[in-house]
Amino acid sequence: MGIYNSITELVGKTPLLQLNGFQKKNNIEANIIGKLEYFNPNQSVKDRIALAMIEDAESKGLLKPGDTVVETTSGNTGIGLAAIAAAKGYPFRVYIQDQVSEERFKVIRAFGGTPIKLTEEPAIAKTLKETNGDFVAAIKSLKEEVVDKEENVFFVDQCSNPANPAVHKRTTGPEIWEDTEGKIDILVACAGTGGTISGTGAYLKEKNPNIKIVGVQPGPNSLPSEEVPQPENEITGVHPFVGVADNLIPSTLDRNIYDDYIAVEALDAYETARQVAKTDGILVGESSGAALFAAKTLAEKEENKGKNIVVIFPDTGLRYLSTGLFD
Ligand SMILES: Cc1ncc(COP(=O)(O)O)c(C=O)c1O
Image 1 (spheres, rainbow, N blue to C red):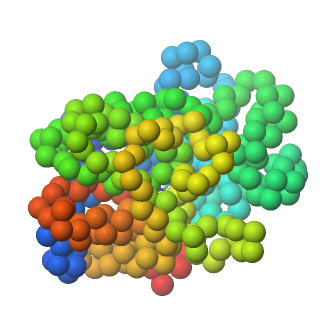
Image 2: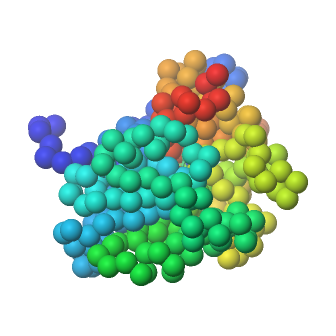
């Protein structure tokens, strides 16, 4: 492999692992294959989009030496961007949802970035209060009232940046196709920005339109509601995309790409992440647990016996040690 010159060269080419222990424990007769995105240099799938969005902006002249990179995120994109910005020499500032695990804030600071809680920025705090916590509206107010008024900043905006789904079409999809030698029947992926499922799904469908793409969204008890604005258990990074107002759907999610979706409750996601740690020795985060729970539901169906189900595992469980996930 030789010697690499930058972490930018270490992004992607993550391995596929068949979960033999999990399959045996659950008497599963399909093949469940995890794509381990924690093998990226900063342990999540978001390293792919962090690099792609920065290099896309550089190539278009939107990001120049000395500019500050700015983003809003629930965490992993912030970490990926903080590391790539550090390696490339850009200052980095990121606005993060208040409830996100403390590890993420610490890691961003370690890379020299500046993490700010959403409620600490007055323009965002005001919008969140006025819109009952609407994250998309909050990002809009950040852009219009803060970033657009500054000079020498590049606002990454993963929820509307086309380089996000594009990198999954260019890398994640082809990697899965090549490593399975085209033997994939179902892809299971969570959606936050929707970049992963849209880009990966688009590539796989082009190769073989019979491949089923299945999305994962939080179940009703794991979503904020009017009665419970802050549910006790949520799945970090995973958002609903069915039954949601159009203006709350990121443009990076292609709603024509998935054939079906499965709603998973946070407690089932946590339990599944704990189980696969014991059966296969991999420590993954709660969205991986959600995707694996959905894959198990599919694998238990008679019609899916013997099929190859590839599941995207977005990040490492180490990022959740301060939360209840592994208590
Ligand atoms: C932990 C985690 N899992 C899954 C996702 C979903 O990925 P995507 O934004 O590509 O839909 C995210 C993104 O926000 C995430 O942070």
